[in-house]
Length: 440
Ligand code: NAD
Image (tube, rainbow, N blue to C red):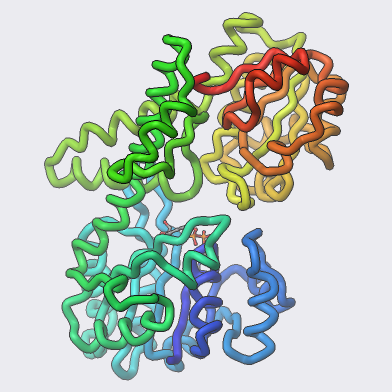
């Protein structure tokens, strides 16, 4: 099929590559020239396993092209995927302006039947909003708008897209439904994995999924608090409940809270949407509040130990990305922790992340003034030079498997705050390290 993908970020690029891999003709559109130049040189602008090779392979075969020419993409493609940002507004609602702006522009170029598929995460009713905008700008255009939320996980995005657990297609149009089922069939083992529903249920499915996972993380984090108060071990409790198939073991890792570009904004958007229609989604409000408190949990322990003034202390931070295997730093706990350290006058902050240091400099929600005071170093062990306290914010494997001899030798202050429970307390005790983790 001939497909256009508008927006080549984490979702759009993987979507475009995934469809191209299955032999479709894909035109990826973006308005960011720097990104387009990187893509045309055969590289991925984001750090995601396997993407570079697939960009080269599919560009060489001619299955994918990268352009800023939206008109060309709309004229050439029967299906147009919107993979545009829907960032949070001040009030927590999802900002639909990218989706609406592009929809209006698409409307100007539609000459024959087109299927416009919204893959961006959007509130209930957005399919209708897009449809109305298209009609407003071209009342004669022949089209369907479909909701097709994306469930890929950064860090495993390509595999998630190529082998999805389920595909949700929300539309009341038979023509659009048939086309999309045909497009997605090569991706699933079984046709039952393609879930057909109305537009609103589809839109809500995405928010429900992310909000549920955020709630699950928050639940185990509060169990971790109970464990700390009772000298119990949250890792054991998580295992004990996770093996119950009704509960499941995933998303039961206690830590310093969830971050990323999706959970925080999707939780606030669902709260905001619910408030807007007169429903108080109280459980989610508490999830949101608890997660915000959570991100700076190590700071509370530090204050207990050292008081409110850190001016005599040098800190090291391992991990800036919001989770391992990605360079995404949006809403990462690391930024919240570093701000607190600096507000409490930390003498210095050294930081290292295997892939996310450049993106942290550019995108982390930390004021430039704070960023400029961080010493970014080129190896995890360099962080340990002459620091008093090490804080672990991301559970990268290279941190988990760090050389213990170097750690014990270099870490002058011998204090570690492990926000991701990557090490065993007994082992740290043997190394003579004062080790604080979560819920143990
Ligand atoms: P992103 O910011 O990484 O990518 C968006 C892209 O759109 C950027 O490359 C940007 O340059 C481009 N863009 C913006 N305005 C444009 C325009 N007018 N014309 C052409 N291109 C334009 O965002 P993302 O993480 O890929 O997320 C996109 C959507 O998918 C969001 O709604 C998000 O909630 C949802 N989503 C994200 C993930 C994830 O893991 N990142 C997973 C599922 C769903």
